[in-house]
Image (cartoon, rainbow, N blue to C red; front, top):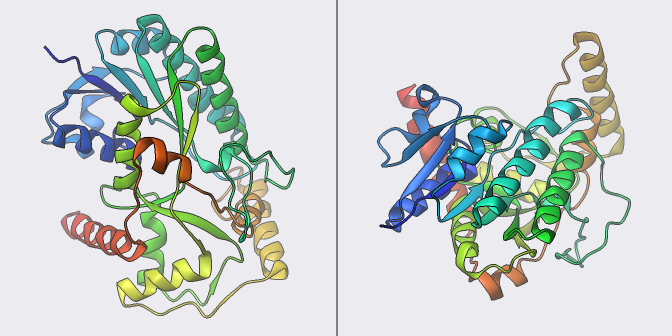
Length: 328
């Protein structure tokens, strides 16, 4: 009997694509979900449900029992200055619980982190797994929580665990139920965006990331990180590529520091007045003005990681989003 692979965060962009890839490979899958009623993204899939929250160690330990490996993709995302304790409660406590349970069971853990937990790269020198932090990275709450989560995983690894960390870049692709990056595609497709942020990012397809994650179960080295990124392009290039694929108006230029400052401060003010920080805030705009460029050479060598074209990723994302929202 083949033991199942446990996936947390299975309703999210990464986790859902990982589940579907494992099923394609005919691997039995168990998912940890807070309730079976909140699992529309898993409808019709042959998966075993374990009910619980990653913040509950007993539920996590029970879900991990009798598995071949654990892929921890559950995370809370908010790019801003607020919500640090909420982010820690999910991202740090969740990682600690999964790492502890996996170590106790003696099974491999794949911890899905983010390139934002690493050092910044540049246009001419993309960062890799060994690049030291520059001090220019924006210490927003999400970044802080993901770095702390990695440290928890590495701590358990040093105490006898068997964990691998993967750091995906900016992911596009289908099965984006929330949506996450799909919001950007829909926003550009449905309204004119004359300006784009100044910086850039490393764009990849979530299906290729899922392949890299699955490969890391057998091929990854315990205690190592693997960047699963893609093509390093400016946000203006990305926005224009999205506009081409969705046949919408193309942005004309990046906005500069003055616009970034005014819009960012305005978002911060709205957050202070309303008590809820909006997605557009000074932290998010500071990050989008930087060049988050990364090298996936290590993952390509060790995991066989490959990345398809950005145009294909955008086209498939847009097709899926259109089909999804035409039904809803």
